[in-house]
Length: 214
Image (cartoon, rainbow, N blue to C red; front, side):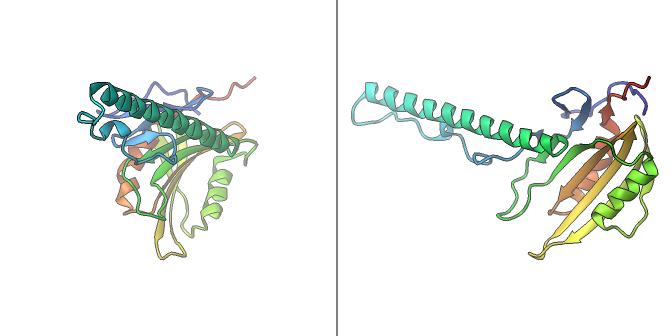
């Protein structure tokens, strides 16, 4: 794997970095690093009308507004705690960066997202890792070799029909560094363009700190 220079991000993009600082990837405009929580998509209480005409007079108005503000702060703190707990759970599964699309899915539909998963002690060669990923998706097509700034990789695409009649669109990039495999996976139940238009530039922005070899 090549120690590539920092990614040059497009306008409006941000950078998401794993907690151990070994992996970073570009986050397109309209996406954000993190996960959904119970509060996701809910309007802030600060958007509610202020109590400017309460029967109790100005002092009552101030008290009610302060209560609303405190409730919103508590809800935001609970949401942040929930998100950190979910991210810690994903990290135990090997998912070290998770990015979700800002568009709200319809009820029952999975949020469009992409993530970086690290698999320790995986198949030793890139070809073997790509074949393992192909089997994971059950794809009949051969992985496509691609060249990323950090080195050679394989790209795999697959559509899965779900029980609810929807289709899960998937794009995966496979990269190997020493004994570890890195999987950059895109998933969407929306139109496939939701991930097609960002997959390549996101993959080109991926940076991984190469393993130290003795």
